[in-house]
Each structure stands twice: as C-alpha cells, then as structure tokens.
Image (cartoon, rainbow, N blue to C red; front, top):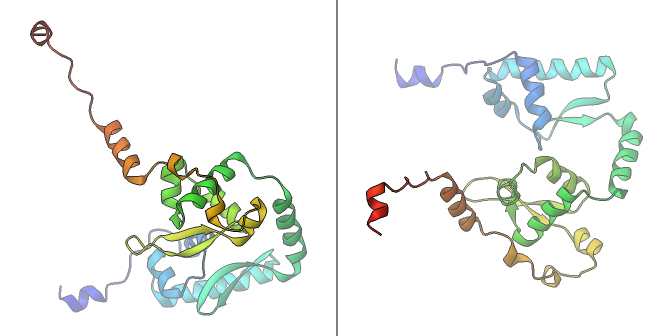
Amino acid sequence: MSETETDETLPVPVAELRPSLEAVLMVADQPLDVATLATAVGYPVDEVQAALDGLAGEYTEQGRGFDLRNVAGGWRFYTREEYAVVVEGFVLEGQQSRLTQAALETLAVVAYKQPVSRARVSAIRGVNVDGVMRTLLTRGLVEEAGQDHETGANLYRTTGYFLERIGVTSLDDLPELAPYLPDMDELEDELTEMAAPAPAPATEHEENDD
C-alpha cells in the first residue's frame, strides 16, 4: 500500500457514532471542532457533522434541559436558556456552602504550587482531583493559567476572589506552608523506592560473618 493510500484510510470506529459523540462532549471542558471529534470517535468528518446536526435537532424536539450548539467553530453542550433560573439558583446555593476538606486541601496545593496542572495536584494529594477542581473553578477560586509547554496540560492558579475570601492582598501574604508540600522530584523518588523490590534476606553464612 502506498503512502497516499495510507493517508486516505478512514478512521476505525470503536463504538456507535452518536453515543460516542455524546460521551466525548460530556467530558470536554471547551468547544470541540468537527475534525477533533471525528478523530476521537473514529468516524469520517462528514458523518460526524451529520450526527451532530441530528443530535442538536433531537434535543430541541425532545425539550431537553440542555442543547448542543456550534459556537465559534466548536461544538459543546449548553444549558437551555429557559432553565437558566434553575441553574443560577443551584450554582449560587453551592457557592454559599462550605468547602469540603478535600476542596480545601486541593486549593492549598494550587495556592502554593501555582501554576500547576491537575495531574501534579493529584500526585501531591494522592487522589484524583478532577471533581474537586471543577468545584473550585465553579466557585471562582481557581482559574486556568495557560498550558504546560512540555505536556500541553492545562495549568491552574488561584484568583483575586480567592485572595479576597482569605483576607490577603497578595500571594506573598500567604503563610509559609510551601516547604511542607512535597516537591515533585522528591515524590517521584519516594514512589520509585516504594516500587523497588525488597532486598533478599541474608543467608545463614552471611549472618555468621558479622
């Protein structure tokens, strides 16, 4: 097969098209263009475009609380306008509630290690922090701060609202807690040591040599 024929080979679908699109769009944190979606689900671009149009029409006909829109060249789920009051009430109620211990710990890591990726925060805390980070973003305490040049991962930092809520004017006013947060190099060394096999027990001959 020539190189030209290889480049024109269609992607290989791994699941049904429409449910696959819904699954990807459900976890996306930004609008996705048709080409990106086609690559993700393994279908040709024209079929993906038709499926997106069909899904958007179905959601409208069924009167769902959300719709699928193509905004600025990217597809994303949005809350339907007539339910904005319900969503606003839910979000405001969540902002007035106290943060959980997990959220406070995650916020502390971001504050002292920023800008930092979710993966690094998860490594430091030892648990997945995706849900907690979404809460902090929704509450306006954390915001995106570009991407890591090496990995391409989104980076996060605290906001001015965070400083306002804890009563300081600058990150320099934070208590000196940074030295107590593990450095990523030290953490990797510890994980390596934990994964290393245990030393073999000494033989009777070796014990007698002491």
